[in-house]
Length: 340
Image 1: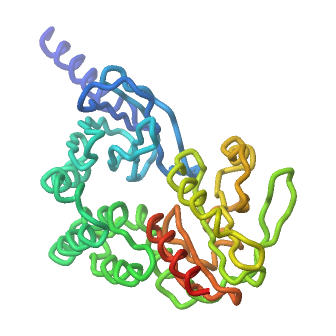
Image 2: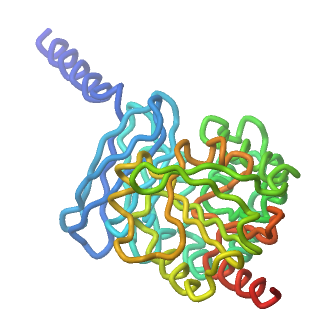
Image 3: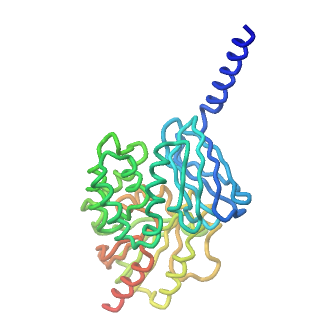
């Protein structure tokens, strides 16, 4: 009888441990090289975008989140570089091993989809890390077309495929190849909507005038007709935009009234966050804020597939070039300036 009671107690304890956090998921991990740094965790929960800071102490970190359904979780280092991604949902305990030098070198346990995804990335870590956007797209396209029933294909389209500019139409076609039950609609629905919009004719229609917020809560209006050439640079929260700022600084000698205007639009969560990251020196170009991010009434018609993103227009608002590459944006603008 005593043995039976002991067995029951142990069984209850095991059940309690197994069900110890039905309303959260827990992640523990190690980072190669044992760095002691801050980490930022981002995912989209029931209440919208969730963001939290955790700490890696000598390479070991942990955090907890909540999502009753599978959710894509992204982990960034203190330089705001992506170092790992996973899928999680409440009740799961997930273990990760990450490498800051190559985010494709990743292993995961505790969520089977995350494990499969990590195994695929790890097996191609070197080729993916060194690949150009088009080469990386080709690698992913081969996997997607050969594995249309795999949810990993949907995750790769969501996170690794460069759908900027004219690549959007191909991305839309590839995503639609994936079986409905493997497409992870709860995670990829936003991407599908964006691709459908970006690959449509409306995203290439002339850019219409739109209003924005300037410093001092002043309102401004972007009008393509104010200059023969315009560049619109749409950024996120401004904390990791040094390379964009360097590119815009290099274009300052070309900015002149009626010839070239540049507007840098921040989609930070609020104007307070935007102001904290404003440059203090003279920028020459316009720094402004747009509420509502890429879905706002101003940016929505542009069909931006990702951030940062750049659009070059003529004085009629016709889009001469659009894309996500900082270097390409600069070179295309210089080319257009030389044709003036």
